[in-house]
Image (cartoon, rainbow over all chains, first blue to last red; front, top):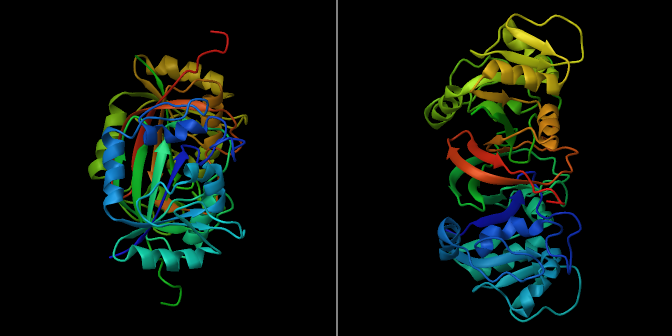
Length: 202
Length: 202
């Protein structure tokens, strides 16, 4: 059965970027440390990352890829990642939520809002999962509207002391259930099932 | 060797209480869920918790107790916990940081500031560990001043959507190193070594 899985990396203090992120600045000051796990160890903005995930991190990623059917990302993420060099980095359709009318780079599909993204991505994914990769704003939107079935938080072992918070301005309480946890030197990967709260008049 | 271990439970969105915590209100709205792991499962403020930690949570607590030499807590925590019924809940000396001049309940020692608390607690602990149990303000103070050697974060599987944030106003970046992780149905226990950053002129 297809499900929507939101996945994002945060610092221990809950930031998905360091201070001053954006186009040309990646994940902000110190933000490289969030993604050591993706690249197999330390890297910096000055020297592009060349490594790949290893060990527990590779096993975790490989597990997620098996059932991947489509990916959704926000426009800020697309811009901050500099369009991933102009090529969809996933082997499946990649939908970018944006209000702008410019043309997407090859392999990307622009959609006007998150609901349209879910409709298109579910269609494309068939029985496989729809991965919602962030940024924080689209994950918050999807959590608020009850459209996330699984939440994967990868906690990098760093306190960043500033940046963009995943749960900034998020005032909804949500029950979660553990699916599992894996830990490498570079991240603690926690997987949660998102619980549907019973309606007040149930 | 004695070390300072700060330990605290947070929600996935980084809150150590729900909204409206305080004397008579425990850990605030929904805050019971933070401590399901301590009491072996669900409980509510209406019916006092009676259970004890079980399984992974018990193993985790037992591991921490082996080397426990002294405990430090903040005054707000002491008040919110209603003095733990007037009895020190730990089998070791318990120091409460407070500016007020009232008399402590039996088994507690009041000290005027965090540095005095560390000095007294290290003395009392000998070769064993000093546990800094929170609240958030004393943990932030101790992290800022480089006095924490190990940080244990117990993440309860809940998004609270409000309350007091552990890292509120904390603008220092700190490198961490994984020591280990354990997960029960009620918490993911992550243990970190706190890294000393090299001095800029080293």
